[in-house]
Structure formats: structure tokens, C-alpha cells
Amino acid sequence: MKPSTAHHAMTLALAAAWDYQLLTFPNPAVGAVCFSQEGTILSIGAHKRAGGPHAEVYALRDAYALLSGDTTIADSDDAHHIHEYLCTHHNGIFNSVSMAVTLEPCSHIGKTPSCALLIRDLGIQKLAIACKDSNPEAAEGGKILEESGIVCEFGVMESEGKKLLEPFLKWQENPFVFFKWAQRLDGTIDKGTISSKSSREHMHTLRDRCDLIVIGGNTVRHDRPTLDARLVEGRAPDVLIYSHQNDFDRSIPLFSVPNRNVFVESSLEKINGYRLVMIEGGAGMMEAASEVVNWYLSYIAPKIGGGSQTLGIIQEDFEVLSAKITDNIILWMKKK
Image (cartoon, rainbow, N blue to C red):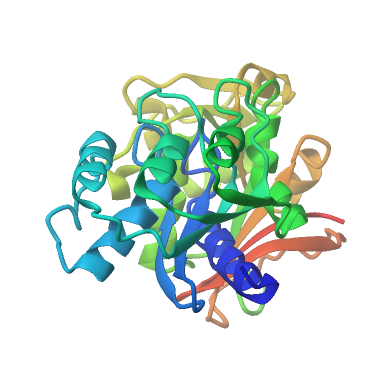
């Protein structure tokens, strides 16, 4: 495959994966693209949540529907059904199709069937792969494919692929911690709803995946939050209120959410007992958590005015890992 074609396809695969960053916990975020010999993009897939179809399966499902005109499985999210249907009905349609995948296709059969075996059985001829899979249970998919005569080019946009995988590698043994805030164009972070509905739904989906939310005591006192995932009908994680005073009004909604632990502590040590942790707050909380935060997530709303508080006392340079523009700007970042 042409390097420019593989690079373009991998760029699209990475962007698709970033849309689901952390939402696949405890699995990695992965993207996949199917394209023709001429370089035409046929489909783009991403792993959406643990236990669901992998990125390759979604990409192959959609490519099949496009090329064959058969839409029987076009809306299916059942990985086993998609695998079985494609293997039975592909009729050689993938023989001229190549793929770009951000992570080596899995070799094992777990909650979903092996992607490497599916790709082999469908007759895909060439793969561009950003990163090898370091998970011993799922690794060696590339070996299966190469032993079947499929050309696998590893290391395509590898550095970008490794950035995508950082949370997954981190939470294998330690907590992965990210700090989230929303702001207007003028930098204000207070008073009223800032983010769009779609951004709030994204944030609630992240809460649904997290083990723990950390929030400052003053924010709890002033905002009286619930800190649940009601917009997506998700679960509410445990809450750590970082405060030197335990003088909270227990009628604040976050205290009455069922099946939740709420801790009030003057240190952040509790974080070490969790794997995926979201910290929310303003400048004081950001400064207090500086040593434990791995990444930063900011929702920037196209609004000016309405607030007075900013993160102005913080001075930090960030590397942008991913930027997505919808009705808000969503930035994933880490310190330079």
C-alpha cells in the first residue's frame, strides 16, 4: 500500500478512536479503517465500550454493507453475530480491501471472537498497524496474520498510536487520573451551564466509566452537585471530597445517590485504590491535584460572558493530544 494512503487511513482510525477515549475502560481505545486498492475509504470503525465489538469488526461490518449492498447486519452490535455472518456471506468481497488499525488485532477469544482470525478468514491482504499489543493475552495477532500470508506493516504513525494507548497502559497497575473542566471563550468557569448538551452527555458517559470522582469542598458547598451520570442513565461512581473541613450539608444531592461511597478527606491518597479517576473543579483543585493528574480534558463553549471566575492563577503549557470541534471544542491534553 502507498505510504500516503496508509497514513491517511491511520489518521482517520486514530480520530475515530479518540472519540471513545476512556469510554472503553478497561479496554484500550482502538480505531480501524477499511480502504480499497485505489485508496478509497470504505468504512471507519471504533471500539465503543468494553464487551462490545472491536473497531475492526465495526469497520468490516460497514465495508461489507457498502460493497455488497447487503444491510442485514448493518445495525448489529453483536460481535459474535457479525463475525459469523461475515464469515458465511463475504464471498471473497474483501480480497481487494486493506485495513489500517491503531492496535494489533487481537488473537484471543474472550468476550468477543478474535479479530485476527476474522481478518484472516475474510481474505484481507494488507494491514497497516500503529502499535503492537503489549497485552500477553491478546498479542500475536500480527503473527497469525503474517503466517497466513497477509502483509502487516507495523509502526504506521506509531507515536500517535502510543499516545492513544497511554491510559490503557497506565491503568493496568496504577490509577489513571484526568482533570476535567468546562469554560467559555473568555476563560470563565462559573455561574450556570457552560457546556452544550452533547458535551455534558459525553462527560456523563465518562462518569459512568469512572471508578471515582474527586471534587473540592468549596465546589460542593457552593454548587451542591449530584455528580451522577443521569444524562446517559449510567452508574454514579464513588466521590472523594477533598476538604480539610467535614461540615457539609448532607442534603446536598451527591450524598444521597444509591450504591455510592462518599469520602471526605484532606489528602488524595484514596485515589490509589481506584483505576480510572476524574477530578473536577477550579484553579484550587487543579493546583492541589497537579502531582497526580495524567491528562487534562477541557470543554470549551463558544460563549462569552456570564461568569467571573477563571483558572487565571494556574500557569501551565499543555501538549494537545486530541482536539474535536462539535458544538463545543473538546481538548485532551497533558503537560509538556
